[in-house]
Image (cartoon, rainbow, N blue to C red; front, side, top):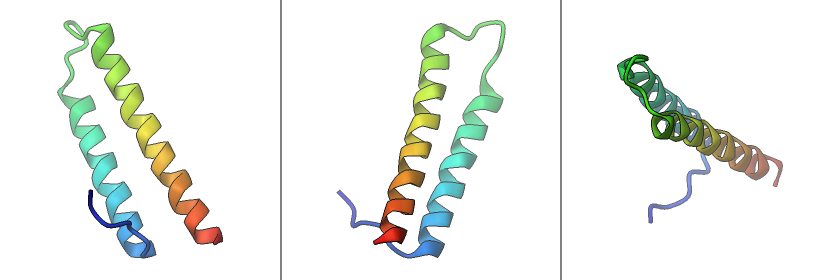
Length: 62
C-alpha cells in the first residue's frame, strides 16, 4: 500500500483525478448496452469517492 495522503493539496489532486476517471468511464458507457453490473460499478466508484472525502475530512479535524 502507498503512504497516507495528508497534505490538503494532494488530497484535492487525488479527488480530482478519481473524479476524472469516473467521468471518463461514465462518458464511455453506451446506454443501449449497459448492464446492471456496469451501473453497480459506477455507484461503487461514487461510494469510494465519498468514503475518501470523509477520510480526508476526518484527518482535517484531527
